[in-house]
Image (tube, rainbow, N blue to C red; front, side, top):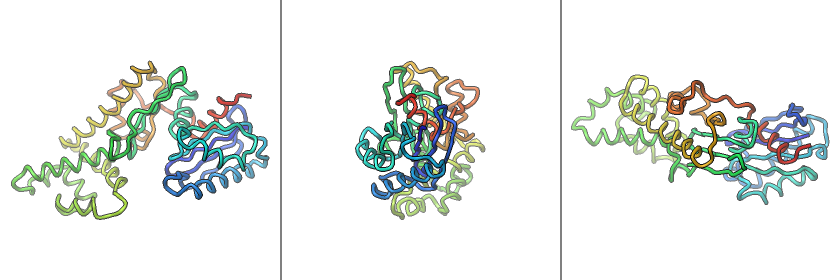
Length: 306
């Protein structure tokens, strides 16, 4: 059998499959296994317990697992393969280990092969591409301080900047309250005035990265009312994301038929999704062939075919 493990930012999923990827047992744990978030000891325990549980559910010994595909947020095989091996070997002593990252298993699942592009836009943004000859490259994905342009935090930050710029430029800010973007953002943050955005943004620890990213929703509402700043910012976000796709196509000649969407802003029907599809000439958003956890099992099969 093959085992797939998807350790995303919010949930840990595991699936045990037959050689043709038919699920035999599945498990979802509503916790992250990201060692950067919960520590390596807690992450290791969570992963081992999930593997033991899915094997027990199937009533099969660990030795029946021929190969396991693994993608865990915060534990990319590029820098964490030794730790992942240390975690997995006690519970999977004989399985071949196909160690990767959470983006690659999502791509493999979405396209059904280790080839294509995964465009992500959630709190952050990135594009992960794998060429026909197996070369892998990340575009973007620099984190909220260095980049992640086009993602939720970037959109929220640009929106806040637009409001502060407007506040500085007007003799009487009261007039700007009629602007849809200003009205929606102040309502969403509970800030009576733009100056009250300062304690809202800086008055908590850790930084409000997710709260800033959540400002995409009131921004979309303002966009629907024709707000010019909301229109400009969402268009700029779409430009950045489609730019990643164009760069990957130039470097690797990957067709759009092998493009997948990831992250909440692109996987659901948002105005950003619509604009990205329009700029790329896609009639409909790409639909994934398999979920990421089955992508992990498929990666195991690709590494160790029966």
